[in-house]
Length: 105
Length: 308
Length: 223
Image (cartoon, rainbow over all chains, first blue to last red; front, side):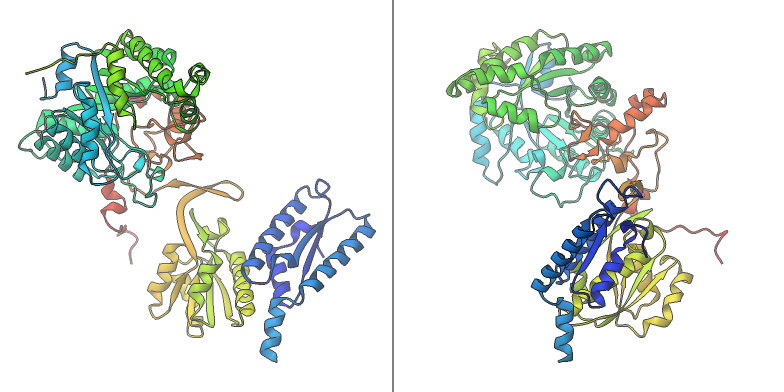
C-alpha cells in the first residue's frame, strides 16, 4: 500500500518486469494536486528513468507509463487502464517472457 | 636598453610604436608566413607570431618568428602556459633568445576546449604573471627560477596582454598592476571598439601610476562587415562592441562595409593616440593582413623609425 | 566526498559478456551519498543487467552485496566467502575501492562499474560539483576559501584571465562560474581585497599527483 505515487521506486518497476510483467502502469494525482506536494513529480521522473533503462535493455520504454488523475475520476481511470492494456496487447509479450518461452520450448 | 629589441628602442625614445600580428599556417609551409611578411614590410616595429591561438594547432610561434626574422622583421614570440610546463618554458626561452628573438609576449592561453584537441592534457603549470617573473629573473638575475646560475642570459623584452573589457571590469586595472609588479615592460590590449570604456580603464591605470612603468599598446582590429561585428559581440568572450559601431557598419551597403571598417579602425587609432598613457598601437587584422599597410598609412603612422 | 558516475549500460554489458554469474558490490560510503554505487544502485543495476541479459537470451546470475566501505581491508573481508562462487566481481565503488578489491583478492576478475570523477560537494539534491583537486598543498586561506586549482579552468594563481564573460562565467562553459571572479568577490566580502595585488608564486606541484603516487604514514597509528 502506497500513500503516494512518490513512494514508487525504480526497483519496484524493474522487478515487476523481471517477474514477467508485460507492462506496468503508474497512476498518480494530477500535477499540482499532490497531497505531498511533489511526490507525483518525483514518480514521473523515476518512471522516465525506468523507461530509459527498459529501452537500453531491449524491453521497450513504452511498456511503462505514468498517468495522472484525481481520485474522483473513475471513468478516466477505466479509460487509461483500457488504453494501456490495448497498447501492451499490441506490443505483445515482453521480450523477457519471449526469451523465457524460447528457453523453455 | 635591456635588449636588442627594436620595439624597446622605439618605445624608449618616446615614439608611438606600431606592432601587428601574424598567424602561422596550419601546416609546414613556410611560404605562407613569407607571403604575410611581404605585405607588412616597413609597416611595423615588431610582429607577433601567435602560439596555437584558440588551441588550434598551427606551426610553432618560434618557427614563424625565425621565418620573419630572416625577412628583416623583429618578431615577438608569443608563449602560452597552456601547453608547456616550466621546464620546457625555460628551455624555449633560452632557445628563442639563442636564435635572435628579442621579444616575448607572456600569456596563459585559451583553454584547449576551443581547439581540435579538447582531449589533450591541460598543463598550466604556471600562469602568465608567473611567466613574466620567470623571464625577468632569467634575464636580469642570470639565474633559473630554481636558483641555479645560467650562462648566457636570455635578453628578451617582456610583454603581456591586457583585456580592459573582460569582467570583472573593476579588477582589470589591478590585474595590469600585478603584471607591472611582476616586471612586464610592454602591454598589448585586446581590440578596442568601446573607446569611452577604454578611456575609463586608462584613467584608472594612470591613477595606479602604471602608464609610467609599462608601455601600453592599444589593440585594434578592423571589422570586415556588420556580420563580423555582430558575431564577435555575441560569441567572443571579453569583447565589447558598442551598438553604435555595429549600426555604423550596418548602415553602409554590403560592398562598402569593409571600407567602413577600415575607416572606423583608423579613427580609433587617431583617438587612441591622444589618450594619455597609450604608447603605441597593435593592429590585429586576422586573415586580413593585406589591409595593415592601408590602416597604418591612413592613420599617419608612416614612415616607421629606422635604425642602423 | 568522492563523486562518481555509473558507466553506461552498454559498456557494462560489454565488460560482462564473458561471464554468466557475478558478484555486484556496492559501497555505503561516498557513492551512496552521490547515488551512484550504494545499496539502491546495486539493486537497480542488478535488475537492469538481468533484464538485458535475459532479453538477449543469455541470463546472468548476480549476487548483490553492499559493503560498509571498499577502502578498508576489514570491510572487504566480508566479501571473501562469496568470491569462489562467482566468475567476476563488478564493483560500483570509487576507483580506490575497486582497486582495493582487486588488491585484496588478486585471483578475482575485478571490473569497474563506476567512473570516478571528482572530489566534490552536494550543491543541491541531485547536483554534485567539483571542489578539490587533492593537490596536497592547500592555499584556501589566500583565496577566500575558493580553490584556484579546481575552480579556475586554467588553475591560474593570479587570475582571472581575459576570457571571463559578461555574466561572470568561464570562457570554457557558461555553466561554470569564473573561479577568479568568485575569489575576488569573496576577498571583497571578507575585507581582504588588498591581498589580490600580491603575486602568488609558482605552485609546487610535487605534493600533487605530479610527484608520483602518494602515501601517508603515521607511525603513531601503525601497528
